[in-house]
Length: 351
Ligand code: KG4
Ligand code: ZN
Image (cartoon, rainbow, N blue to C red; front, side, top):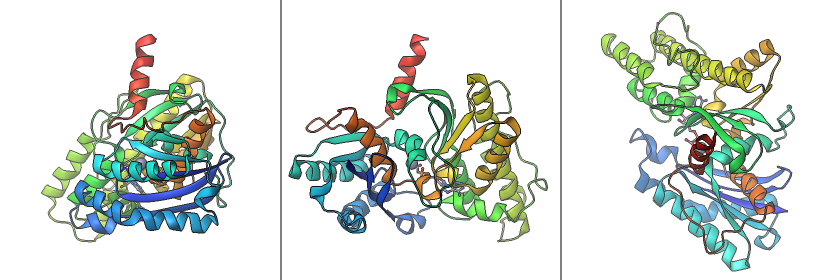
């Protein structure tokens, strides 16, 4: 069964074709970074226009690379939220048009569920086998940061255990990069500079050190960086900048992993999954392996290309929904908030 996935929730225009085993036949991503970089962040209006311009070529490339035609596809999956409304609409309209033209079933996919299930996508460079349910997942992206207990692929089987009270981890990376003149997006450049810095030379706040809580807060750390930059003048591309990045990144990474592995212990689970754009961070990946080894646990992380936004994860999450018999033909709706929050709140009320 082949599912064609479309992702346009933010600044990546992506189309992928995936089978029900997580085999990726094609996975095409057009990044809009160069459009938005000059503004220091994503400009929603420009994102929609870029999607409109690029979605058809990206779709054609996805079919070509897979060696398939639309008539070979069994179902269409599209991100229906959370994300920028105008950007989402471009992908959803395209998906509806494709599904309608061939009478295919279509499903709207929650972007966060896509991230959480990306760990089941196959990749030739991946050595670790996929995890088994249930597991603990840390989802760290530009818009969300939360820890989940994941019992299965259905929304109702995913429970939020703790989330950020303010900024998402990726947002903190992006804001710190802006403060230090490193441009947008901040994650990859801080990742690179931090590797050449000493995390102990500049002391910054440790976010939410309260041990018992599974909630995060990154705004204090961000303010600390802002104060340090104000007191120490503009930073050129020098060693102090590398040290600042290293200290900031270490504090974020240690807080994320401390709480995630504490959640695993509390829940009696030995498998931890990382997901979302920040899971591409090299230090987070390496330290997660250390944490797991020390505790006799297992950590499974998607291939780098499946951590940041992509359509393969949407196609796979959608293929699970299609196999459950879901079909949103004629009823597809945009959801500005993640459906996970609704399910979790309902679930929390029951307990
Ligand atoms: O999942 P994603 O591609 O989009 C959202 O759903 O938000 O995540 C984007 C976020 C951005 O904040 C970006 O700075 C961050 O992921 N990111 C990283 C790295 N690569 C991307 N953060 C830290 N280290 C990285 N290597
Ligand atoms: Zn994302």
